[in-house]
Amino acid sequence: MVTSSYHVFRAALLTRNLKLDAHVVGAPTARYYLPGAVIREFAAVMRDHLRIHLVAALVTIVLTLVFTAWIVPAVVLPSSGL
Image (cartoon, rainbow, N blue to C red):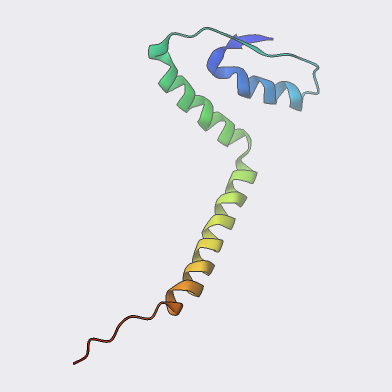
């Protein structure tokens, strides 16, 4: 399968989901076009795998809150000496 260079990763994911035995190759893309195209591809991969990304974000937030609640009380602030 031949596609744009920025689209190779998502095309490979799609062929894997369709259980196709395909080799994905990227064609050259103009440099000025790449930043926007890569951002769109990132958003598309996030959308295609929304459930796993939401779970990962939720786990990260919960772990951050748990560790913050655990570590912050352990920090002893020096007394002002007044």
